[in-house]
Length: 219
Image (cartoon, one colour):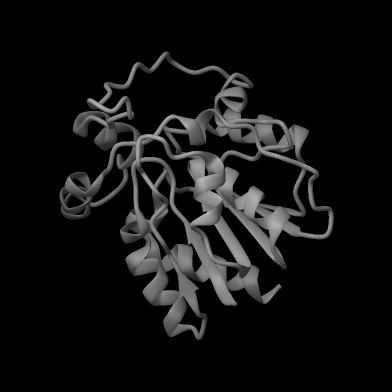
């Protein structure tokens, strides 16, 4: 079983964790950061099937939903949400967005109906505090996002024996801090870590993120 599983969010892939994973491995952790499937017909269940078991699961952004689903199915000691959607059974990403509606976003779609993240939107929403050279490397690697994982509800029942931590990013422009707090109000966790990061600390401060994950893992 992997020590730590890092699950990326929408439009991304396992590549986004490279620096954070390297720092965690240097600290002695075994780390996996696989790609979620992005075929047009991909479902939430497909995403969960593609993931290995791990003692510690971290989900970023949309990745918080498959993280919860995976923790229901396989032995898990600790679940970390990184500015992620925090679902209860029956919740979907689309439903959670309605807890604190933000500006309407109409993403373009590719020929297969998947959502495409425009470069300027990514710079402003995902990467506003990320060094320019990292943004330049990230933008060409963004992938179209299938719709079903955003619409499929989290199955149940919830696991009560998993310790949960939430890393709240106070400068997030993708999942507003007010939405993060609204989700925490209805789905309390064991500990909240409020940070000064934006939405993508794996690119803006990968070493700092790795240190925080390491501290949480140590208990």
